Amino acid sequence: MDVRLETAMDRIKTRFAVPDDLVSCHTAVVGGYVIEGHVPAPVILKLLRERPVLTGIAVAGMPVGSPGMEAPGLAAEPFGVVGFGPTGARSIYADFPRGFLQ
Image 1: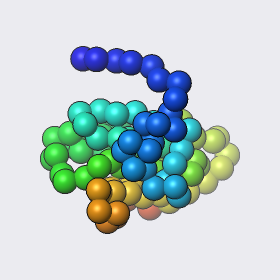
Image 2: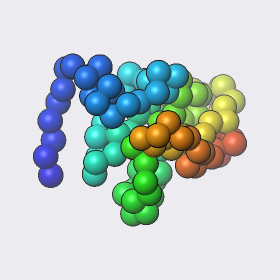
Image 3: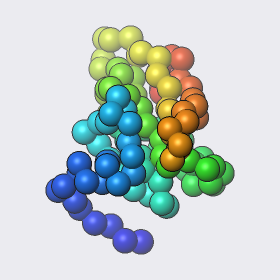
């Protein structure tokens, strides 16, 4: 496995055509897909297993209840993992109507 830390993340986001409204502070490239934001690990594993025709998947913003955004005392927010492709097409790849851990 090749692991490489990058500091010029804007270039990575541009190269993989991450839509502006899905850009996050967390970006990874795994198995040829870009992973943007607080995407649950099981969804990444599903992506790698299914190998859909997508450029990547993303969670917009930092919803409470997404991985790494747990907040004791605050209700988890619903969020979706958006799949996006090279033509600009989008779909909900995974849906978490009650947050990830609910």
